[in-house]
Length: 206
Length: 206
Image 1 (cartoon, one colour):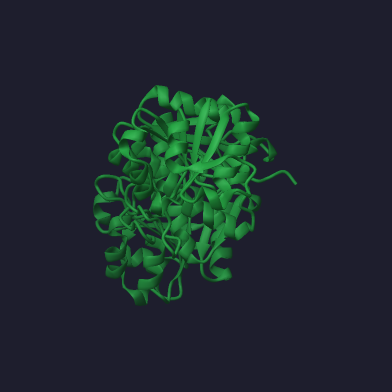
Image 2: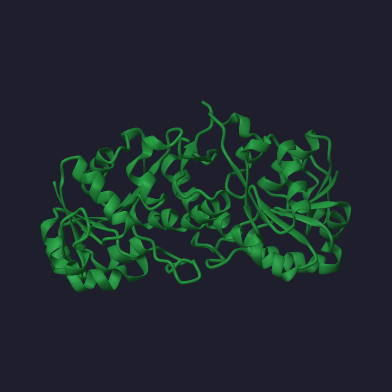
């Protein structure tokens, strides 16, 4: 699959490595591609990355994602699946979208794009190496449209997440659950000194 | 231990049952105790419950907790440990404290009370019967002062949570992590149709 990853940070590079390894044709999109020639991935401009990808990944800093997507333009993003991994933080580490979520906001601003929120409940190492954790854990999906979620689900499998680990939360409104969890994630990571963990949903015994 | 539980809802009653079973002397506090004579617990007025308890539990609806605690009064709450389980929701199920948390707010409003946030990341059945889940899971603690957290930690053990399941997140500021997780909790519960689950932190293999 042709995949355009918007961003060149830790998350963008980890996902690019994982998806390239699985055989996908991946490029990273940057506002300043000429300055990112040091990376082990093909780095192109944002518009080019958007046009390259049948599926796009938003791995840009969340507080700036919406203006950046507007620079690419609604027409360029129309009809595409956008896997949104970003979370918007303010400088004091409170959420930039304290009531709803960035995922919902992007879907609202780009109604012709199929936004699926996923992978934002863990750090970039766990994201692409769930098997390195000491047991099974979960990855969540939020979005409208079963086809878009199925496409993202296949990428999750390619990154090492077996189907049994996927938990479909429902529509894009549930992205707020994934994003708000970031505050618990940070508290756990800070107190344990370990950002590489994930969570597992433990059900009642039947 | 003498414990005063503020509230008479599901959470208050579940915690009262669990702590009575463990041998504690528990009363529930209600604004209208005469109307709650149907319960299997001793129900008294709020002020009386506060004065009864060496340790207090806030199990009132979170959006109304602060005014209710003010009715009891800062002097009556001074010097006591307050285990705060409440989360404030608005009518549309968004958080009533979308930036910080109720736990922080209570600590700010009642500086002479030792607020410890815990148990708010699960429903009332899991709270008092963690062994009914299909595997180990975690309970979080946020608060100032090791003595207050140790007292709450002992109550958690009495409710069935082994020490190994406790995760101390740090100061009361981390209560926002526990409270904001409520949105993910609701999304998981709604999508699976099961509110009785909990989460486990899964660490990287060492």
